[in-house]
Image (spheres, rainbow over the protein chains, first blue to last red):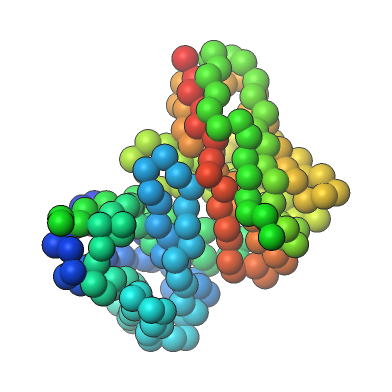
Amino acid sequence: GEDVEQSLFLSVREGDSSVINCTYTDSSSTYLYWYKQEPGAGLQLLTYIFSNMDMKQDQRLTVLLNKKDKHLSLRIADTQTGDSAIYFCAESPRANNLFFGTGTRLTVIP
Amino acid sequence: ETGVTQSPTHLIKTRGQQVTLRCSSQSGHNTVSWYQQALGQGPQFIFQYYREEENGRGNFPPRFSGLQFPNYSSELNVNALELDDSALYLCASSLGGGSSYEQYFGPGTRLTVT
C-alpha cells in the first residue's frame, strides 16, 4: 500500500536554505508532488516531478528525487518568513488520486 | 480564469444529521476530487468525479457520496454524521480524469460535528 512519511517540524533562519524530506513506498508513482498549506487555507501546488527525472528546479525551489531509495526532497533557497507553512509531499500511483504525508511544519525565524 | 471555490466555509452539524458541501471547479477543468483532512493530518482521498461519473474511490464508507453536474461543479454528501467526520473537506479540480496530474485545491469547508 501507499505510505508517505515526513518529519513533522523544521526550523530555519531567514535567508538560509530549507530542506524538507519525504519517503514514499509505491515505486509505481508516476508523479511526486509538493504542496504548501498556510493556516486556515487550502493546498497550493508548488511543484511536481515526473518519476523519470532526478531533479527539477523552479526559481527558489529545487526538487531532488532518488527513485532507488524512494526519497524526495524539497529545497527552498533564501527562505523567507512568508515561506512559513506546512509542506506536504504526495505520491500518485494512479493519476486520479494523491496520497499525502502528514506534512512538515516549516518555521522561519526572522 | 477563476480558481476553485467551495461553500460553505464553515459548518456545524449534529451527530446523525446529513450535510452537503459544494465545489466549483477551476475554469476549463472537467474533473473534481474530494479529500478529507483531519486535524494534524494530510488529506485523504475520498473520490473523484470525471464527466459526471465516479472515477475512483478511497477507503470511505458508502454514506459518503457525491455528484458532478454538467457544468463540472460537484457536491459531497455525508449521511449519518459521526464525530470523526469533523475535518476540513477539500476539493481539487483538474483536467482529464485519470490522466490528470495537476490538481488545484479550493480553500476547503471546515465541518464540525457535535
